[in-house]
Structure formats: structure tokens, C-alpha cells
Image 1 (cartoon, rainbow, N blue to C red):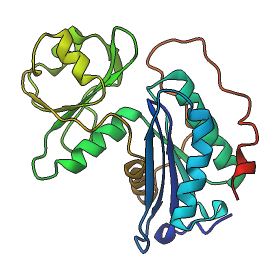
Image 2: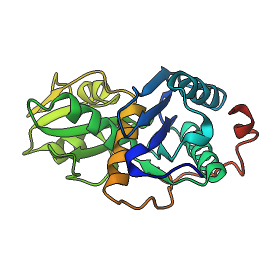
Image 3: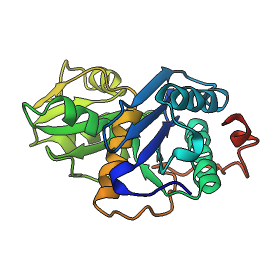
Length: 244
């Protein structure tokens, strides 16, 4: 097992929960630059994820057994992509006997927006496409703490949740939300583009912050936000044979 010293942690973060596939390597000691790659895709995450992991590890100069911690998104998102990412992350963590930590796609998107707006701290509302009539939604304060639970709501319900608040609204569902409320903006909120997919580099940094704070890496379970007749693959076939 790799050296688990918090001064020299290497994190692999992966995401395939939404309309893309991402992977990043992050170093806690900052002695080397991390490597991150995000590829937008509607389908094909099962075929793309492992080669992407291989690529970022190679570019970062990291061998697979150098990794100390695995981070992954756990939803909400697409059922297929979410299961692919979680299955891969569990396979990696079990093979290496390292901790696995999970983050919701909503909190990773919120953290990206917060990092980009440090000069003007504000509440962050995240609105993500559910591919149905509703949206996945959560509101965070300027420190990243949640003000609401992650939920599936329609446009009218989101307006009600945001009433009385101000801040920034992000996510791949914002455009449709504005169309459905027949307005160019949500009252009190400024929409920012560029936050359609979780950033695995930011997720890796979040995982390191949790490790340094002594946060426990509990069993990572999917966050669907609605009932579904889905199950995890029993195994990720030959997933580790592609990692050298």
C-alpha cells in the first residue's frame, strides 16, 4: 500500500455522472503540477473512462500503485454514467486498498463557481438537467455549505426556493430553467456559464481537504434523487488490466 502521509498524498479523481468523462491527478504537496482532463460526451463513458485515467496518470508521471486516495462523483446525473464511474472508483479503491470518497455533482459544481468568485463571495444555486421535466437543484452559501438539501424540483419550485436569496446560478439546466420561467434571469441571481460538468481537479482538491481535516471516507453510495429500477454492475470487467 502506498505511503499514506498527508504531506505526500496523490489523489485520483474521476467523473462520468453527467454528459462527460473526466479524470485528474492531484498532489497534496504541490511539488508537481496536477493533470486534469474533461471530455464532453453524451454516451460512451464506459469505454472512455479507463483510457482517460491511463492518460492522466501517464501525463502526471504517476504509477497506478502510487495513488493514495480515490475520489468520485456519486450523482445526481445519468444512471448509466453514474454507475460506470462508481463501479470504476470502487474497483480502483479495492484493488489498491486505499480510501474512496464521494461528492455530489452539485457540490463539485458549486465549489468550482465559488473558486471562480472569491473576489465577490455569493450564494451559489446549482441547477442540473435531469433529462425529465424537472431539475436537480441545491443552494449553497458563500462558504460552500448547503442551504438546502439536494432535490429534484420543477422550475416553479426552484423559483420558490430561491425567493429571498441572491447570488450566482450555474449548471447545465440554467438555460432551460430560464426558458420555462419565461425570463432572462432568476430574480436576485446572475447566471454564469462554463459549469456544465464537474471539474475532477477541483474534486481532487476537495478530497485532499477532507483527508487533511480527518474526514472519514464512508461507503460511497449513489445519489439518484428519484426512484429508479437500476443496479450496479457486479464487476467492472478487466478494468484494472488496462492500468499499468
